[in-house]
Length: 370
Image (cartoon, rainbow, N blue to C red; front, side, top):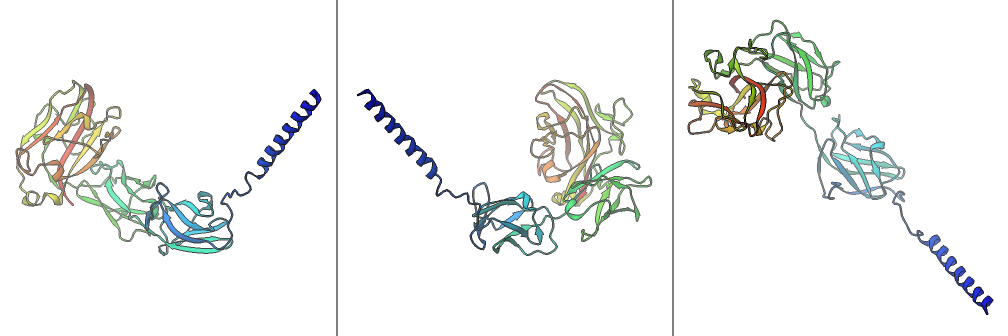
């Protein structure tokens, strides 16, 4: 009897084992890894990878999905006439994920073309080509002999490089180095004077670009005429180099919510066009911060009772022990009416939210026409 039971149990266990093995063998019979194609490619849509929303327009470096069928075994992909590096794409039968290449095409076709071992397909896509942007000099009042940066964006797209770029001052080429996508270092000639320009050109830049140097515009105050607590001429201990006469400097330790009146004066404007058309002008000035003491919106630096947010997004401003030109809309810095409207009273205050040390300077308050 015992032997019969043992034999029965053995047969039962064998049947379970065989059944289990059979399940393992047949479990993945219909699985498709979507890495094979069976015909010519087709494209039905272009979407965003994040939420699969259809797009008809894209910018450089945007990620997109090319949606369709038979999209594997890719031989090449073109967007306009720019061929993509295939090591940067991910392709399955129904979708290719890629980034729009950061390169200006020679021929704009507004299409993406996918070529596989079994055929090719195209689909419309408008790739926006960014323009070159030159914001000017990092410090427009850099002194003769100084090295200063030309700043902007998309320099690399327009081949602003050492081989192809020419920068002139009074018709003479200046020393230019350290070319990046958003800056070029130049040496200001020793004979450079106020209210002049540098001229930048390159084969891919359609028209030469003028870059203002020490454009005075309408100077609002000559700080040398005042003996206020925070006005200095650049000769006091720790002062930054003066760019254009006296300037304002706030340095030392200050209590939280201390009321530090940096500069307050009644004034008038003799240029009627500034008063009549403030939207046509920038309010421009230079700022200097110690590298260890940047300034932010929490420091509550107030121009005419408006809290100054240096970058408009609460990012602290650090000029790293050098002067930097700031350019703001006049309409953002001066109210349209009241005590601090244009041509009435100018008020500059610092009232930090917390106790801290400061070392920042401001110079050359001026209006410059756009």
